[in-house]
Image (cartoon, rainbow, N blue to C red):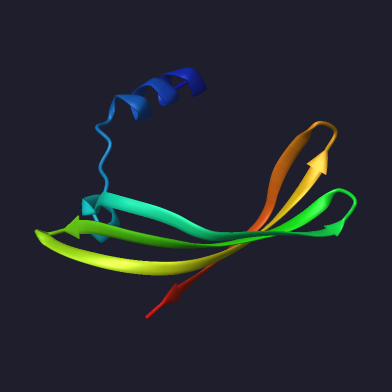
Length: 90
């Protein structure tokens, strides 16, 4: 069997995917607040903010809150998100 025939045969198989809780989550609302932007160099900043969200999974509504910290760098005329940390708040 040639490589292209193997590829056609493999792609003809139906995709199977195990479903998990994240597949069933429906985001109902999200609010971002308390933004801070702190320069840490001529082309870099640290951004922090709070995210409050509400969602539904398996018929149950739940709320959550996370604090985010991000490092952004400027390359030319564009900003790129270099690193992101999310911390869940109980």
